[in-house]
Every structure is written in C-alpha cells, then in structure tokens.
Image 1 (tube, rainbow over the protein chains, first blue to last red):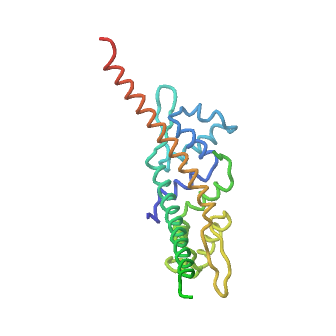
Image 2 (image 1 turned 180 degrees about the vertical axis):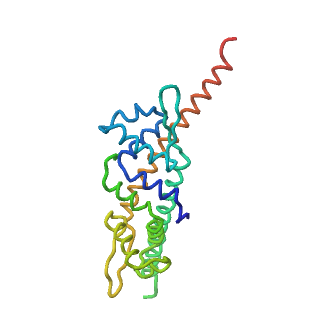
Image 3 (image 1 turned 45 degrees about the horizontal axis):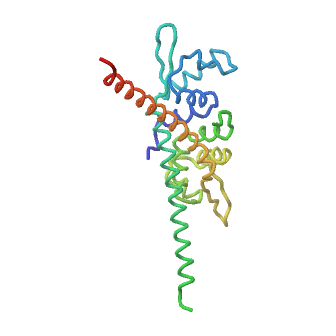
Length: 116
Length: 116
C-alpha cells in the first residue's frame, strides 16, 4: 500500500473540490473541449481554468490543442491509482468485519454445542 | 452522482495527506488506541492529534474514551461514500471505452463484409 505518495496526495486534493469532481465526471464520458466543459459552471473562465490547472498538474486530466479548441480528457491510469487505494482499504475493512462476524458465529455455536 | 457534497469535499481533502491515509489504513484493520496509532510516526503528538482532528471532523474516523485511553475507529459508511464515488466514475469511464471498442470492432466488421 503506497502511504507516501505525492501522486495520491495531489489526486485526492484535486478531488476535494466539487467543480473539479464535476469535471472528472464529465470527462469520464469522453473528451470535451474546454469551452463545453466550462459551460455548465457559473464561474469566470480564469477561475475555471485554475481548476483545470490543478487537475492537469496532478495528472488526473490532460489537454491538447486541436485547431482553435483545447480538448481535455481524463487520464484513467492516474484516476485508477486513487480508486485502487480506496478499494484496497475498503476491502481490508470489510474483510476484517467478516472475520469478526465469523468469530462471533463460531463462539455462539461453541456455546450451544458445548457440554451441559 | 453527488457533485456538490461537503462530506465528499472534506473526505477527499482528509485523504490528501499521507499520515492521514496511513491512519485510515491502520484503522481499516480494527480499532486502535491513539497512543498505538501515533507510535509509528516520527511526529510530535500535537501534530498527530491535528491529523486525527481533520479525520474526525470529516467523519472518516470516530474516537471514544475508554478508561485512560482514547480509541479510534474507521467510520466505514463515510469512507464508502468516497470510495463509491470513485468506483462509479471509474465504471463510467471504463464502460465508455468498452462502447468505443465495440463501435470500432463493428465498423471494422462492416468494412470487411461490405459490398465489393
């Protein structure tokens, strides 16, 4: 489990903002030009560009100029790193609870089946 | 998909620090007294307590005084909210790529089977 991971630090920090999560959600559906990406947000373009910068600097998204537009896309490998960390921890916590339940079930069975 | 979610903002912010992620990892294995939780970290106790405060304020962990010790545990429901968000986005991105692949496969088949 990578505890000291600057990429994870930056990825989770980037995801701590609702605008940036909304951008990630939108890009999970495919590439989008910046203008279309910004459109649903009631936000000045420089502020929106700052959010894209945070996402781009941590490697969660990348962008490319095509003609007059700049297109953004999600970098799925980087997003998966963070999602994998979450899943691994969730799995360990769930597994522990399953073990605890099994232990308590066995203890109960022993109690019932023990000598009278 | 909850875009504007203060709990998600706070949970992801809390997870953007390696010490706090390590605490979450440790607590995924079960309850731990604060003293044992702090032990592996080369950090003054007030700094460590500050990290626990961030985790507790966002609801990812909870703590309880028992005798002379304060015990911490992971709040799995809150952790799962963040993990669910990640999984849902990952699933959408993967599904989109699968659809794209299917489309390209079909297009290729059409090309081969089309009129000569």
